Amino acid sequence: MILRPLLIALLLALVLRPEWFTPVFAPLAPEGGPVIYQRASLLSLSLSHLGLVAAASLAATVVAVTLAILVTRPAGAAFRPLSRTITNMGQTFPPVAVLALAVPALGFGAGPTLVALFLYGLLPIFENATTALSTLPPATMEAARGIGLSRWQRLVRVELPLALPVTLTGIRLSVVIALGTATIGSTVAARTLGEVIIAGLLTNNTAYVLQGGLIVGLFAVLIYDALVQIERRLAARIGA
Amino acid sequence: MFCLLGLAALLAPFMTLAANRIVAGEGITVWQLADTASVLPGVLAVMAGLALGVPAGVTRLRLGGSILGLAGLLWLLQQGTPALLEGAGDYARVSPALGFWCLLVVLLLLMADALAAMAPGPLTRGALLAGIMGALLVVLSSDGLAELSVLKEYAARRDAFGRELVRHLGLAFGSLGAAAVIGFPLGMLCHRRAELRSAVLPVLSFLQTIPSLAMFGLMIPVLGWVGNTVPGARSIGIAGIGFAPAFMALVLYSLLPVVGNTVAGLGATPPAALEAARGMGMTPRQRLLRVELPLGLPIILTGLRIVLVQNIGLAVIAGLIGGGGFGTFVFQGLNQTATDLILLGALPTVVLAITAAIVMDILVELTRRTPEVSR
Image 1: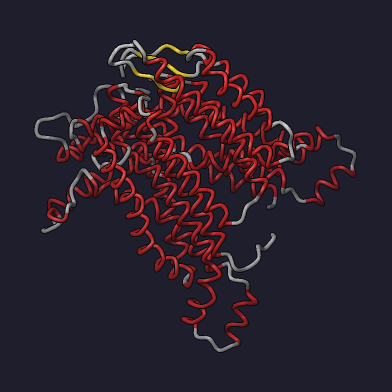
Image 2: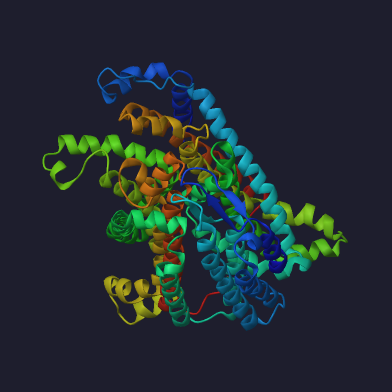
């Protein structure tokens, strides 16, 4: 795709040199109003946005994969039906509602956003990791047992690497949802790119809305694409 | 495990008492709610309910335990609210706190777990759902809870609540309908032509990736421009803010599950069935209508389920761009730091989403004609 470098260039320009776009956005701004978002640098907002998403997704991945390993061991099998009920119910919870409900419990700021992103991010990763770990090819497992690998060695050397591509799909879903939910996090005073869109909505400044929307949209699309590429590489290496 | 979690939750503050709707309240544990005589039955019921959930395997017992526990919770709320409000001033607000919510979640999970283990048929589940909804309505409209903070907030906005409910449902179902009208034919075309499929599906999944707030925001200039330039568009309500951009954004998000699942559903017809249909001399059109569509229906409906649940959640964001719906309450509440108002918007959304998910699951099961193919 030749589109990819173009989009990356556009994104970098929008974040680092927003003033270049003044003529493009000017017709959309209200008469005499500001055209380019000045209240905070777009770079720091982007970094804070991505930082939130990365922290929440990392924590969610660690916890979800650990839980998935636990419920796929013989000792944890009793919790499987329950964990499935929780993931099914949890995924019908709208992300915005999770965020809104975190505020009464945790107050405003980055805290509730982080918690909401983390909680919501757990579900897809857990679901995919559990599916992957419980549908490994029986022949491979048999072979691993046959060459005398201990349970721990089987987990680390066989099961986890084989489950990686499907787990990564879950991580990708969760990251994309987190990127979107973090945008809404700015309504509870977390510093994210949503701030630019909300400022635009409040002051009727379409130029702001478009800037924020374009940057967030480009980030989401490019990160999604990057994760898809990684998944393909991994899947190809495993030969799945 | 349920039992331990529940007992721990009993120790947490059960309700909060605040001087008015804005300030943070102070937590009050179960024991301090009212005099011991009126609290005791509720506490006992909750503990007995949790205890009944301990033995694994006896699902009826667990189900009964969860119902008993929920009744105990309700009793505690009803006893606690008037007792706390007595002499607390006119603007005082009483609302359930951490302990209550934790217990509620634990007991509901216990119930869901027991029900899942009993695996009731689709019709039984429908009846159960109707029963639970009925019970919820009765409980909410009873006098005992009317003094509760969230319901006071509701009483003050009774008309607005009804209006936003209709708006919310209109957004969710309307966009579902529009997406179905566009998506089904598109899906059928994609099923026929592989090259169209490989062109359309990536574009749709690209759309799905765009964060919701950005999508809603981007719709504003687009529809604003349409409203200003296309004659007559403004008179039918197409404008930069309000219902139209929210609706458009939801339709765009809905297309991927509808088209994707239509393609998958039509493609999942067992080759033997198709072969038989061809052998009987059916035309391609007959094959589509009589074989492929009925057999693919469960998968297509699953797509609609995803869309409906997703849109009920996303419609909340419409509140930010003046599109109405429960989001209006959520964002008003966030602006005023009025927790109860946030809950008034968020809780019905959650209930709607879960109800929609259950109803659609039942429909999917009812339309399933082929035995589940094990892969």
